[in-house]
Length: 148
Ligand SMILES: [Zn+2]
Picture 1 (tube, rainbow, N blue to C red):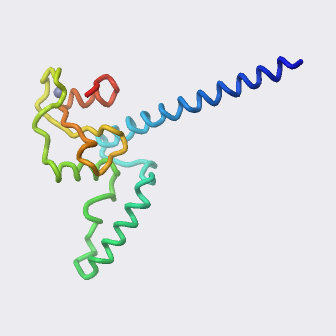
Picture 2 (tube, rainbow, N blue to C red):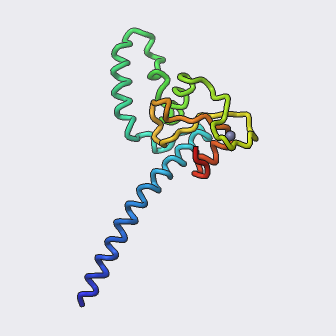
């Protein structure tokens, strides 16, 4: 009789560990999904993520400072309106320019089109969170097949 209780506990533990593992997976998943957006150049229901509230706040703070400055057309420092990721990609380009090299030491140099790849998947406004990668290494990196 008591075995039933035991098994339930075991199952419960398994569920917990699965849930914990699932968390990691879903982060990766989000990362991949957000990458897909760049290609499609569109946003789906993901736009209401963590940052956006904070960003909106900052945007409106800035907006109030800019009153009187042709703010009809002002789109918020060209940040947001589109995906977090796209805006941040633009931000990185602004800070560091377009990448001209690939930081993968074993890069086969099959591509001469270089991109900014995000390290953490959190798209931080931190230049250290970004890597210079060619298109082919970028794809591998996003799939988790390349460690830099
Ligand atoms: Zn490369």
